[in-house]
Image (cartoon, rainbow, N blue to C red):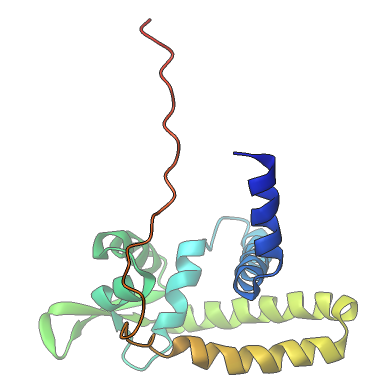
Length: 181
């Protein structure tokens, strides 16, 4: 990769609100997970857990297939994470009243308590960062994010009118073999 292309990429990412939000979210999650895990004395929470929990905040929980679709992964990828959470007592699996073959993943009381605790740690991180950010900027950020999240939760607009020309995807260069040995 050329140095010029890497510098161009860095410049693009420095100016991208989306990239900045993703990176800030990653760093925030890492900090919260580190604090939760340090308090627990074990790796109690992983990124996979954090991705599933928000989808369980609805009455009646969520089907595994719906979790997989929301996370853009396969049902097989979600099942072990759900099984791990169930083993820890954070979620329970209940029959789906609309489909006897399906199961719904529901937070248990312990799961809700764990999320309350994690949210408290999240608020502690916010309190630690607030003096450096300034209370006014924290309030502005909160207000903007409260407006942004519902916009991002809306379905994407249909593809009508969009350029349907296939885009060329970047391809990783092939590694040369070192010869036969």
